Length: 351
Image 1 (spheres, helix red, strand yellow):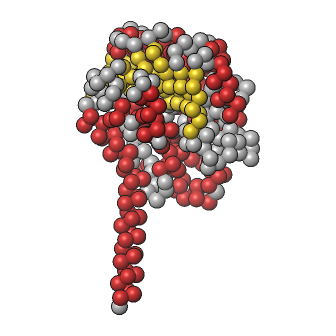
Image 2: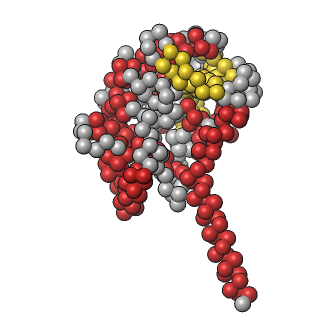
Image 3: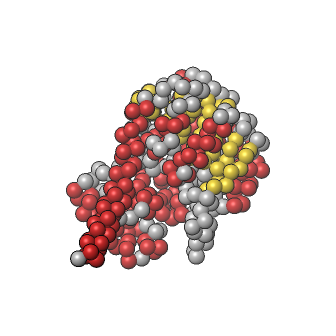
C-alpha cells in the first residue's frame, strides 16, 4: 500500500510539473507583456510629416532617454522582460518599426535609410534630447545607421546585428534568408494560401532539422489557426526556444513585404555597411551571440547565426570606439538573458 501511495504521489507531482511547464511555454510571454503597464509604460502614436505613423511605448521619466529598436518580425513589447528594470534608470522609448506592430505598413518606407531618417525625426521631435540607443538584429543595423548619422546619440548597443552576412553576395547562405526571407518572397508571389504561418511551415528550413515531429507541428498549426487565425501559435510541450522559430510567422501584424526587402536586399539601398559603421562616432558595444549548442554553420554551409566570428571581428575593427562582447546565447539575447542585457545597457551611463 505504501508503495502504491508513493507511485501515485510521484505521478501526481509529475503531472503538476508538466502542467506548470506547459503553462509557462504557452502564457509566460503574454504575462510579461501585460505587466508592462504596471510599470508606467504607455502606448502612444505620432504622425510624421511624411505621413508615416510610428507606434511606441514610453516609460516613466526616471533618467536619460533610452531608445530601443526591436528586430524583425516582432514589436516593441518584445523587450517586455527588460523594460521594468530599465525604466528604473532611464526614460525608455521603444518603437514599433515600420511594417511591424501598429506602426505604418507602407512598403515605400522599407529601407534602412528611410526608417533611420524617420527615427532621427522621432529623436528630435518626440524624445527631444540626446539618447542612449540599442537595437536588436535588423534594429541593430538601424541603430548603426542612426549612430553614424545623428550627433544626439550618446552611446549605442548593437545587439547581434547581421552585419555583413546580409550583404547581397552572402545573404542566401544564412538561416534568416533561407527560413524567412525566401519563404516570405514565395508567399507574396501566390494568392492561394492567405495565412503565412500555414504557408511557411511546410517550406521552413527547420523542417529537415526536426524531421518527423515537423509533420505534427504542421498538423497542430492547421487546427489551431482554423480556430484562432490571429493568435500566436504555440505548442505547450515544446520549449519556448522551439516556439520562437515560428513566432514571427504567426504574427499577422508583421508585413511580409518587409521581409521581401531582405530577400532582394533593397532594404540596404544607399547603406554600405562597412562605410556606415566606420562613421559611428559614439562609444559602441557590439553584442555577438554565439550559441554553444549548435555549430555556426550547418552541413549545407548555411550560417546559423546573425554573424560569423569573422563578421564580428571585422565590425569591431571598423567601428572607431567599439567594445565587443561575445555571449553564449541564441539570437534573442535580451529575451534569453535579460539580466545580462540590462547590465550592458546600464553600463552605457556608468551604472
